[in-house]
Image 1: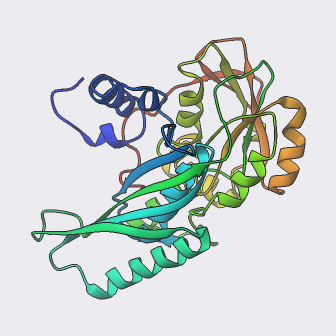
Image 2 (image 1 turned 90 degrees about the horizontal axis):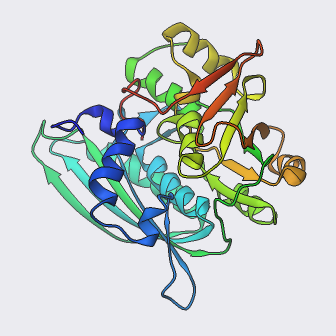
Length: 326
């Protein structure tokens, strides 16, 4: 562990994992935390509760396809869904920088209201702090969420299980980068920021569903690694089957980004029994794709079968190609 925290520790990649496992999990160990899911399942109630929290520091706060308010609600609601829960309640804590325009705050709060209504969740508690000018970055938001568990999800993979991605990848990371650097491209490259409640409900109806996860920080590659790194299984992705929109690919080609490592904020990864994979893809819609499979080869490793038939080993994101994407 480095002596000081760097931006790389917030990338969702290798240094983030080391920070969480070596400094946080090692101190607060308990069964719920040790699973390192997007949300914890709490079992000491009449009905199992799913609990999650997230902080949002996206720069800029407004981007094509959304803003930090929409992102804060979608992010926490989606995390609850990915743990097999149905979200019910959210908290909202604001950290505002002195001088932040009230009109911008109203825009953000209206986005939160609209997204919460779409998700059928209530924002029931919160907090507001104001810090001195130039001591923060305009606005930061923390949301915590509570839901009820309606689906048991675990890591009990079987050989040949299919890996499904619900839609095209990397749109959020590309969109935020364009807004931050004021890059103009032809077309309409917008973030994929969206609620995943409906898609999660569809997935919950399949008996062969193993696990769900939304590939946010670190993108599809890092999230897939997280799904196998503590198991005895490997995963193989097929580059020909990765759904990447042409505008995202163009931006990545221009700037040297790998779309496998750019964040999504409205996409779902599902690992499911191979015999039910086609049916789940059909139910999720035409954008869903089978992008890979669980394999006995290369335990705890993620490989990519390239378009030319070679094999590439994928590792967790190292470094910080795109700061403040969530």
